[in-house]
Image (cartoon, rainbow over all chains, first blue to last red; front, top):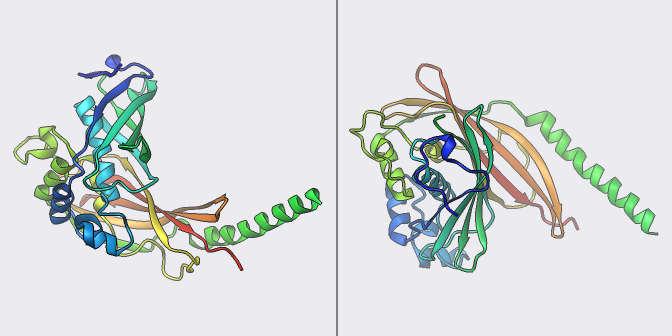
Length: 140
Length: 163
């Protein structure tokens, strides 16, 4: 069962699931990311340009996927401070394909006020594309 | 025969690892680049919104605690991932992951200094051969010299089979 409205570490349960998050992987989103942040090359912003590079279509920049993971944690616990996050890019996140992010609490340290969370981005076929582990500090 | 093959495999693995030991000794933990970043709050607010952040402290420049999401530092990149003189390992490098250690908020208008070094070199061997992983760490400091974050980039190089 998904935890929500997490305000303090007392609200977190070991093994608790974060509410699923469906990130915006549209071409409009990657173009906006390219315009304001960077990674604006065709492999991220143009399906035809990406195919010319041998990709099946445009892909989401890895740094944007990492940003999705951080946003998911803040949506779950708005006062969480992410003090570490490690992200593994296992396979491309394809633009204009639906993806879902799931997360589960794997450790709680009440003395330190921290939780560890495993987070996974999967595509519509249920294949893992990005995997991450985060440590977040919560109010005690 | 099997025993001989295993001994050969072990000997080859040890021989392979020698080149990684040599790279580690020559290149780890030696700063090779320093880059300055002028932090623009409108840019990180857009980053926050397009990534799906909804908290005003990340998206609203008028919020009293306006700051960049912790993962934003992964977008701050230097000009190179390896030190001068680092050898070409014979395969194409791919971005295998990013890591962030957050220590303090990144604020609008800050001037950050990023200092890069190779933090780790290791291998994994699979059915398709050996993969070499390089972890490049950029340590970020603010204008007062306070260490605010580490941003790691993990590059994987899939070596071509040796002929």
